[in-house]
Length: 445
Image 1 (cartoon, rainbow, N blue to C red):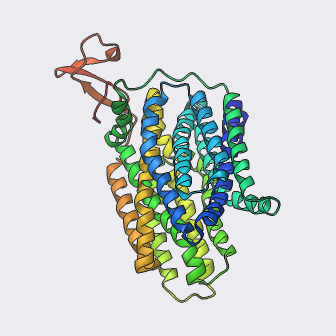
Image 2: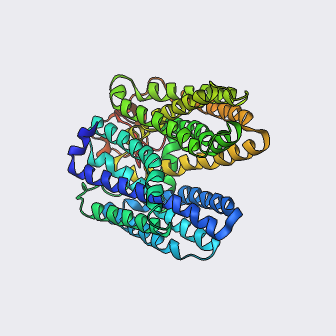
C-alpha cells in the first residue's frame, strides 16, 4: 500500500494532511484544558457547544466552498485555509472569555470545512489510476486512526515539559508546515469550472448530484448507518468504561484504541479486497454487520460485568471500527465514478456536509438516550437506525450498476457536440457513455 507514496505530489499532500491532523489532535487536548480553566465544572458544556459549532460549520460551510472551489486555484485555497487555521490556533491561548472560544472554533472549523473537501477532490486528479486512488483512500483512513491514537500520547508527553498553551503553538506549527508543503506541490491543472449559475445554484449542485444518483443516495444512507454506530462509541465509551465497568481513566483510551485498531486493520486489507469484490458487496456486508454488533454491545452492557465482558466489549469495539472503515473508505471511489471531473469539488463538499449532518443527528440521539434510558436501550435504538439505513441503501443501490448507460437526449439540438456519437430515436438522440449527473444529464435514466 505504501507504494502510492512514490508519487511525489501525493507524498507531499499526504504529509501535509498528517502534520495538520497531528496539530488538530494537540489542539483538541489543549482546548479541553483551556475550557476547564475558563469554565471549571461547566467545561463539558463549553466543549459540547464547541462540538455543535464544529458540526454546524461543516454542514453549512462545505457546500458554499464547493461552489467556489472550481474558480479558485486549489493550492491557493488549501494554503489559505491552513494559514487561517494557524492564525486561529495562535490566538486561542490569549482568550479570556468562553464566547471567544466559540468564535475562534467556528473560524477554525470553517477553514477545515474548506480545506478537507478540496483536498479530497484533488486526490483523484493526482492519482488517476483506480488502484492507486484506492490505496490513497486507505492511507487517509489510517492517518485519521493513527492521529486519534497518537495525538493524546504526544500531548501527554509534551505536557510534562510545557504548559498546555504551548500545545496551541504546536498546532499552529503543524498548519504552517501543511501550508508550506501545499505551496511546494505542483498540482495537476483541474478541469474547467463546473456548473454555471450563481453561488446558490452552484452550492446546491452537489446536493442535487447526490440525490439524483442512486449509488450516491445509497452512500448517504450508509453514512447514517456509520454515524449511528460511531455515535455509540464516541459518546458512550466514557460512561461504559468508567460507570458500567468501573475501570480507570486509562481504560477509556484502551477501548477507543480497540475501535481505532479495527479501523486500521480494515483500511490495510481494503485495497486487496476491493480488487476481488465490488464496492457494493464490501460496503453493504460491512454495513449489515453494524446493527448486529450494536445489538451485541447492548447484550454485553446489559449484564453484570464479569471476566468475559470487558474483553467482549473490546472485541465488539474493534469489530465496529473495522466495519465502519470498510463502509467509509471506498466512498471516495463512488464519488469519483459518479462525478464529472469539473464537479469533484462540489461532490466532495456535498458528501462532507451530508455525512456530518448524519453525525449531527446521531450524536445528540446517543447522548440524550444514553442519559435518559441507559446505554443498552440506546445501543438497540442505534442498531435499528443502522439496520433501516443499510436496508434502504441496499434497495436504492441497484445490484447491477453499470457506469455506461444508454439514454435519450430529447432537449439537445442536432449538431450539439455532446451528440457526436448519438443516433436519432423517438424524438431525441440516443447514445451510451459513462453516465453522471451534469449540465447535459439532469436525471438518472
